[in-house]
Structures are given as C-alpha cells and as structure tokens.
Length: 227
Image (cartoon, rainbow, N blue to C red; front, side, top):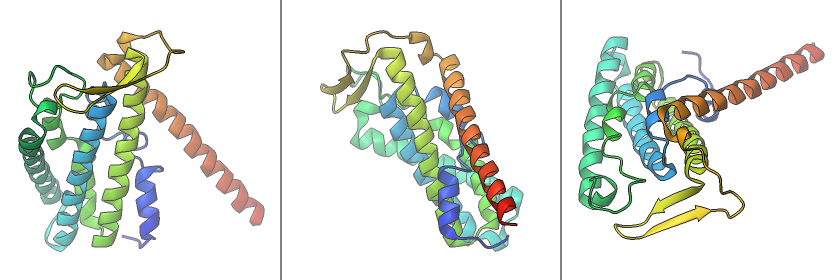
C-alpha cells in the first residue's frame, strides 16, 4: 500500500470516506438505530470501540492473514465485542438495555447491539486493515468510527426532532431531560419508520456527495490553473 499521512487517513474516515455517507457501510444501523439521538450515540460508541479493536488486531497480524481470514476474524471479534457490550451495559446501565426497567423507551438498545456484530462498517474495515500498518489502522479506525458516529448523530437528531418535536435524554430509571422549542410544534411521525431512515440517509448522502464533488472540481481547477 502507498504510504500516506496518518492525519489524512484519520480525516478521510471522518469526511471524504465517511462509512455511511461515502462508502454506504452500516446502513442497517443507520436506519434502525437512529429513531433516538441518545441511542445513536450509544451505538456509535460501541462501533468505534469495535472498529478500533478489529482493525488494530488485524493490522498487528496482517502478515499472517489473507483477505478471507481477515474478514472471518473481524466477524468473530465484532460478535465478541457486541456480547461484551451487552453484558457490561446490563450490569451497569440496565435501564437503557433491558425493556421494562424504565418508564422511558427512547434509549432501549438491547435489540440494536446484535446488528453491530455483522455490520459492514466493521467487517469491511477489518478486511481493509490487512493492508494497513498499525498507525494507519488506528487512524482509520478512529476516523471511521467518529465519522460513523457523526453520520448516525445527524440522522438521528433530525429524525427524532421531526418525528417528536423534541430530543429526549434519559438520565436514569425515573428522570429524563427534554430538549424542545416552543416555536417548533408540528411533527411527522412517519419519519420514525424505516422509510424515514432510508430517506434521511439518502438525503444527507446526496448533500455529502455534492460537497465532495465540489471540492474535487475546485482542486482540479486549481491544479489546471497552476499548470
């Protein structure tokens, strides 16, 4: 692989090669886990840790792994981390995982975590890590994980705000913080259906592509002008 700046690898994962908006990875999570802004942040955090562990492990042993074996190991590691995440959350923050322990429903994520084990956002990145050295694998995992979280956060914030006219943050079993505006009172509940997830994912992906193309065209014009 051609050597490149580690910082460029990091920032590419956040924007130019954003897993959701550019590479269209992890779309299942982008659709089903973005009905709640708070839930999307939890899921994004788990995915970030998952990517970091998977890419670092495969980069360390890349000389002994092929494409297929890297993919299999990524799947096994991702499944293990998903199980551990569920166990830890059930032990420390059971009210956001186990349905019925809280009167609130906006951050119940037990049904979402298993999808992390097989999400393409982790599996494909794990496979690609077989071509990266350790610094670039760490930079790619952090950048892609943050970029994935930003994408989920944007989609989830818009879906929850449009669908409920508020953003809910559950603090514990019996208390919740509510962000809303008196100037915004109308809602569109259909946006909380899977259709809404596909719609907003496609909408923001289109905006992202337009910006990326604009940046590329501007760079080409500058290079042409210099030549």
